[in-house]
Length: 425
Ligand code: GDP
Image (cartoon, rainbow, N blue to C red; front, side, top):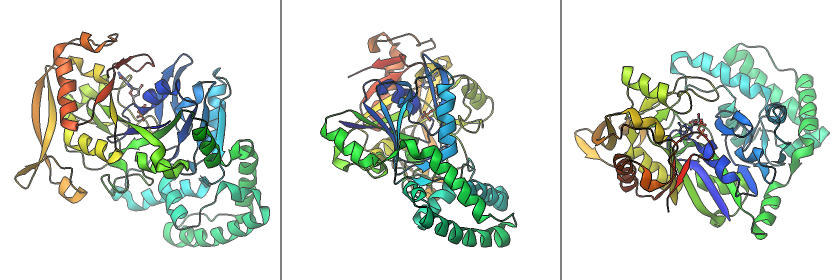
């Protein structure tokens, strides 16, 4: 069976933890989009890890981890990430990399920085991992596929053509040093040697795994609101964050994805710029940020303080719908136990009218939150393992959210650890 774990919000919903937890029941875990630009925090028996490119299944010895064709593959970064977990006592994971994945080139990372510099105050708040230049090149058909590393003649020729083009931009647009074609070619040969042991036709591998009835988990990065089509364009990422894209970015038939778990955070947080209707500021935000996540809400990749807000039911219902969510995992609920009352954004007021439909960015910019306030539960809920043992006001909050978003909440995460989960069917 194929199952997807994806974010319904702005990312950082705690997908890493849910994937790590469900990884136990999985044979194969696949990353299908994005790159090393966002991180997952995972706390397990080996310690605390921030993974960026590796699927969250790498801690189990029974799983195969796949970097699918849809991923922005940063080869030295991947190798370094594998080494960093092995050095901490994790058994060497079984990793397969798609021969159709494209390679994050050193110049993609540079162009990302140069473009942010050029834009100055109008920048997109990129993590500068090269993601936007990477996907631009992929769709402009000047990207490098892993398979191309293994044909030296074609590679050399393509490197030369690419440098010619990139050097024009470097010289005239960014006024930066040029790329040396020979040096780039040598770098790519070193990438080839690093990645060779992992490369295969992962789509064929997955087809076989499906035929054998294996459990396959597609692990999404970021969330619906960062999707280039359905997110808060242009403050979005450059590859689709939707479960549907899992079929493309992994190379499996769309109808095989039977279960889509949207991970939803019990409050809102976002990194980077962009519309955020239920955002809060000042001391109120600082307090939630300090208490949030596991030791504060700061980006796993960038360390940037996250923007904070109350639960946004309008954005989350939309987020779940565009994911095609069949169930929801509600996370970091334990953090909210300090509040006397919990505002939930149940509508957007735009030009004097209240709507529950998530609009396009231009209209979103005008939206003001309409709140409904629910009573707090004022106790610690960590350690509780049964739904009925949660305080009544806490269950009330969960059930209120469930009704607003229209998808069953089947899992409630009340702590960062792998076992801190309440299952509810
Ligand atoms: P991801 O990108 O969706 O995997 O999310 P991140 O890992 O970036 O952010 C989630 C943060 O919240 C991490 O620091 C997790 O350890 C933490 N976390 C996840 N679930 C819970 C939870 O239920 N309670 C608390 N307190 N922290 C959680």
